[in-house]
Length: 285
Image (cartoon, rainbow, N blue to C red; front, side, top):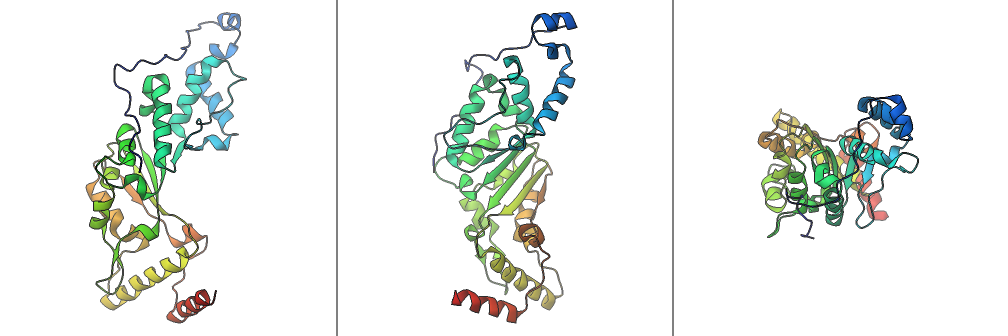
């Protein structure tokens, strides 16, 4: 795990300030400057930018690369003075996908360079691909650094690999050991976001995911029927939802996946025979 992303810029950070728009109060003044768009109010210009970006879906969700520059819309057909406005609009509305620790470093570098670091306060949506971004060590996890650096973060989606979760089997069904998980990964940082409105938990796809989930859900259904109560399963992420919401400083909502959302078809309870046939079939292959 890497531990070298730079911190957000301090007050004495010196970078070249962006080119600012001078106030244009007349159509003639804008025409003389060679761009009549300057005559329009900022709110109207933002509407034009937004309409233009709706035809560019790649800028609704931006995957931050490990080493390459973060790709933004081609602004060559717009006066370069609009770079600041368009980039700010993207920061406030796009989802930035973070696949690795190196990508976090790359995002920090870009945010530090853009308008003296003001982008840190504009970014509101993140998609994080993996618990390993929060793996604890002698240094603060890079995922934790990222969350702490974005004061206005509202929405986070965290993709988790089912195979990385620690389950116990003490009551006849699998239970997620959230405390053991919290000792390995800094998941508490998700609950510490001051303005967060929602955290969405989802599962990383792999070939046997559906089969494993059906088996876990069947265990919960059967034990719940025997005890006459409903045991939280995938719909509560086996207790992680309650753990995060109980510790949230912003009363955020934790959203969990369901079988239909993950696999595109209604979930039907599997009989023991069906599971047995699936196991035999898997063994034969």
